Image (cartoon, rainbow, N blue to C red; front, side):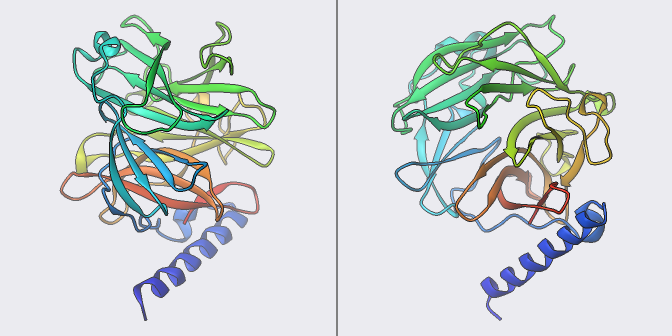
Length: 327
């Protein structure tokens, strides 16, 4: 049996078990172990990845790194280094990074003929943070222009301006979700003409009260009649000791209220687990979701036994109750 054929069989079995679990109100994990990441090759080191399908074909990935690391892929499998978004530095972010060139959690998308990238500048454990916007017509290294500050938090804020995610609804509204620890996940409306805040209103969409209030890395994805809030619980950035896991809640309104499968509000700590540590895959988290021609796709990072951060890609299925599962 070839490895590809064996993989297809196992993938089908895993998906079937996950659907069966969903039909009976169970987490897929209760029926079968979580799937390993799909095959990716080449330049696979990544932390906080985000992927966009290019209008000219292929894929562009952005990930945390000095000047923001870019990678390209023709097929969502083989990835190649593509330089840095900002090879000449980002002095406008130095106030928040303590002078470091390292920028976090880029969220990349393509709208109105150009690439947009929201990204965070901060230092570990601090709420003195900012989210900036950059734009490019090609997405290539060095082509990105700084469009300025979108939102910032201070050391006295009870929220943290990192881990941005832009969602454009079917009706054309733009929303930015972000947040980490403190009082949880926030959301603001964005003006599509500027990419900046449309007004001063800030919505609370998720919060935890255990494990140091550890919820972060939100990603809102619209499917059917629901908005799905993907997020990470617990702790990142500790190599093979990381306890990150991917959770989901949903709402019929983009601003919430979001509830998990059991009906618990995301603002009360609710979240249904869809991916967690298993085997030699440690701390999978920082989810990003996009629709492709074959399926909806989940991108994330995980850690190997050696502590290296790697790109994970799996597909997302939807059970009979319209809840997502990973296969």
